[in-house]
Structures are given as structure tokens and as C-alpha cells.
Image (cartoon, rainbow, N blue to C red; front, side, top):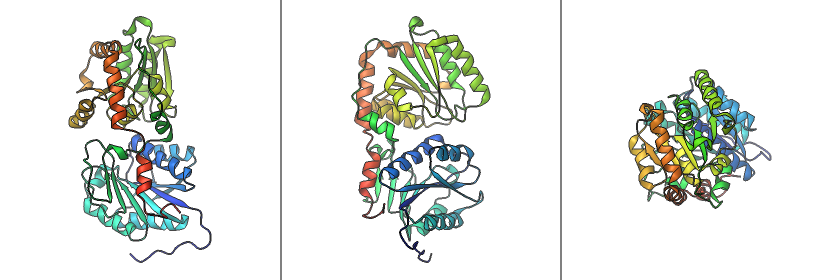
Length: 360
């Protein structure tokens, strides 16, 4: 690929955030892009989010947060994708390109991804956010920030949970001391962006019978919850009365975790957020999840993992919740282990590893 022309004059310092996905982009990956955008702004850099057309949910969320969004053709693929992304970078005067490889179909085409990244890497500082299965991409930095990825001796691969990317609110929450109370009565329920298994209503039914009427419950309703699940949540919340508060997806989730004595979560990126905030938790294994990955968190002591959660009866959920609320020592251990595993400084470390001038 020929060298791309640089913008003339005093261009605004900018960076491209490229989500390599389709309509299947998970909210955790969107939030990771939001976190990167926040950190770039703090460095005086304008973030531009680039995605394929049709990403209505993520696009709306990012635009509502003031992020510039540029859309590629829905069928852009491989080298065409990279070429269009590079043109957008030039138009905005962006030297840094961050790719978030969140689309599993794309990950199944590693040679196509490598070719696309090689084109971008010729003329830009490229940071590729990926998993443990694809760490040999042409890029300035490859970041695999997960608990199941061992640290790498390769200077251009940043691997392991010390590089996990959190939004500013979670970074701030991670720095706060955490008190684990004996008389635990506050429970947060957050099943992620969509709750495809419809577990939230089941959990609320279980919580109705926990705590002898003293329990306070906060429930997060994600942006992709189906209408049927939303209706069921409202019905179950009404049974709890004023003990239950419904939160929208744009609520202060870090603050809600600090409020909670116990969080009940799905097994996505939220596992990292409960750990970094020192929030004791029950992690429910969803269909299609990786039990081995859930076991890593359980072995680390940050959470109590519940396998095959869709088969659980409300009474079993209630028993687990009741047991943990009564066990202060177990909850304190979860909190300490979570903060040992994750300190919230992932973006700080990634920025420190960038070559000089990457953000200017």
C-alpha cells in the first residue's frame, strides 16, 4: 500500500476506534471503545468510531456520548475495509488506529485480518485488541487483556488482565477502599446488554424470598433486552415493591457495584468489573459460554461461578444468595481477590507502551 498523504496545516489530533464486527457486536466491546474514547479525550485526542453500517445500537450509544461516528459500507471486507478505514484516518488527521476484534466470523478468517492489519500498519500506529487465539497480527501493539491469556515476552504483545480496559468510572472505583459489611442486604442484578436467556426475571423471583423483606435490589435493564423480558422484569419488580429499583443501561454501573453487598451477573465482561470494584458476586454461566474461563475467576476467588444457570430453579438461586449474604468472610475474600487480580490501570499501561508521538 502506498504511503498515505498527511493532512496539511494544523490538523486536530485524532484517533480511530475500529470495531471489527457486525450487528453481533457485544455491549462489552462497545463499552471498551467508550473507555478508550474517554481516555483519548483526556489526552487531548479526538476519538472517531468507525463501524459498518447497520450498527444502530452501538452507534446511538456512542453518538449520545459525543463520539464522532463514521460508517463503512455493510459489505466492506478485508482489504477494502482497511482501505476505507485508512481514508477516514487521513481525513481526520489520525495517526493512531485501534481495532477491536469482537466479531467471531472475522476471527475465523485470520489471514484476511492479518492482510488488513498489514495495510493499516504500514502508515499508522495500530493497536489491535484481540483474544488469546490471535496475537500475531501485524500491529504496533497487540493487546490480549484477558485472564486466560498468559503474559508474553514479546514486547509488542501486551497480554493478561493487567491490561484490561475499564471506563473512567471503574478506574475511579478501583481506587476506593471497599468495606464489606456484616449485615448484607443490597443486591445488584446485571445480566449484560441483552440477557438472551431471560435470567433476570428468574433471579427477581428468587430474591423475593430472600432477606425476610429487608433486601434492597437494583436491577440493570440492558439496551438489547427483548420486550418480553422487560415485561417480566417489571412484573417481578412490582412483587418486590419499593425494595426494587430498575436502572437503565446508561446508569452509573460502577457506583451500583460499590453500593451492592453482592452482585448477580452474567459471565461476560461484567466479571472483570465486579473484580476491579471489589464487589462479591455470583456469576451465572450462560448457554454457549466457556466453563473453563468461568473456572479461572472462581479459582482466583473473585466470584462464585454457577454452571448451567438456565437450569437453576428460583429456590436454588435464593439459597445461594442467602448463603453468601450471611458469609461475610467469603464476601471479604472475594473482594480482596478481585482487587488483587485487577487494578484498573490497563489503559494507563497501554498508553505507556505506545511509541512517542502516537497521540499527537
